[in-house]
Image (cartoon, rainbow, N blue to C red; front, side, top):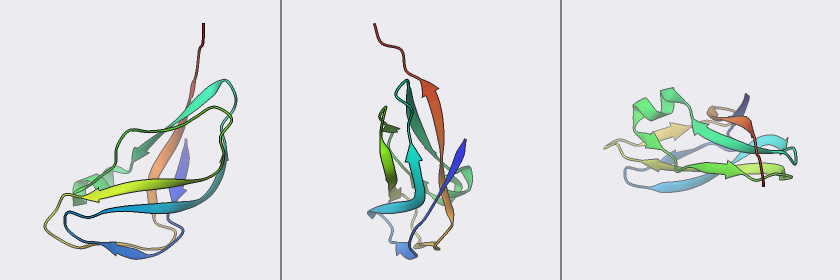
Length: 93
């Protein structure tokens, strides 16, 4: 697993959806997909993200879409851990 961290600081208003670039450069192997899951601590605050996959052979930084379902402004600081990336073997055929 690889921790994905925020490249910028900011706030997410209630009901808002934002896209935050990560600091990490990933290289997804050709036989894998990367599955991105939100950190439990952010989910407890009311943030969610859709099912995100990094396709085989993807190289570069990722962007995480976060939705604030709470009634409160949520602050994200630069370098905060947003999500984790897990590689799963991708079978074809």
